[in-house]
Length: 162
Image (cartoon, rainbow, N blue to C red; front, side, top):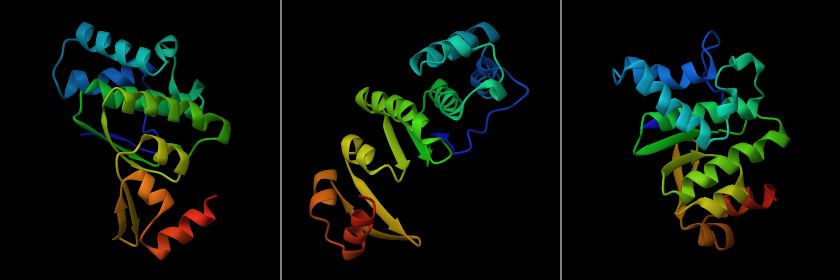
């Protein structure tokens, strides 16, 4: 299982490539050259290979989040959990992260995403789950969830998010 957090959780003292390679070296025990090759492959996938040798402080929030996604992908997870991946971003940077996530969905990655990006959820989801105060309020395919929710609470939420 891979995780991508809203606060990126990149190490400031490591370059972008080193951030992606770190778990490959220390968790999977890979040789440095192999870890670097995988890191570069994943950075390329998220459009960040050109920033491999820079430090996180020089990156925008959207770029940091794409590096965090590459770091998760590098470990070849069966499932990736995203905790509000766009909530810490400026509005104009949201689309670059959502674009990467849409591409991952199109490639068949299994993702569990906590989000308030309703258009994204509608376009990409196989199933939408609405939780509130730790309770499951509704679970449905996206078309039903967004057009004919069973729950009054979900109808209120969707009305307020338009």
